[in-house]
Image 1 (tube, rainbow, N blue to C red):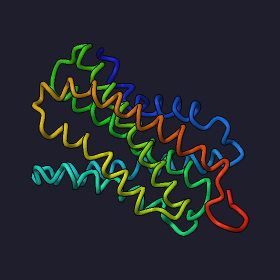
Image 2 (image 1 turned 90 degrees about the vertical axis):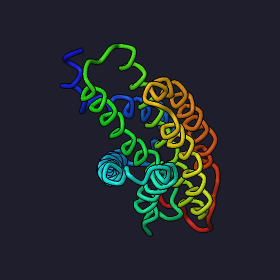
Image 3 (image 1 turned 45 degrees about the horizontal axis):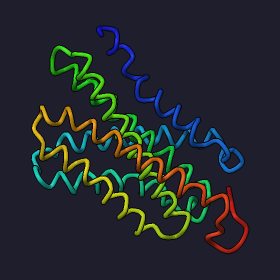
Length: 219
């Protein structure tokens, strides 16, 4: 157990790389690994910025339920809605990588907070990791939704969808006690899986067949 803090920086990237490998098979002709890596790093950077802002606005109490999902999804939107990304299939892939990078920061934060709280038992560690994986998949899915909104010129619809899907997680965290919050990780994990599966199996495949706009498509 004492060796785990030394590996904290890698624990957020391992599940991200696994999800990349599984999710991006069949899309290799659409994206370039260099650009996907860049958006992953950007996602991690804006994730850190979001955490800093949220840490300094925790006193907003119940507003946390709405404001944090709004803040986090708007951060992704600001990056993905750049003019160079609009109407492009690859923006959906970038949305996925941006979201996964964003989410990877939260597993690092969760583990740091867990160890700062004192002695760590195996059960608490497992719950924290499962919940954090759920958060990573939540952000990967919402990033993909926003990217698809930019690609399909339906940005408002998919940004609102991403915010609404994020609100239950912050609501659960706010209304539960510290003890209940530990077990809440068991709910966040399958919730994240369901969102991620929907995004990657129902939404992302559309870029292989759909022509949302007229004219030659860019990668």
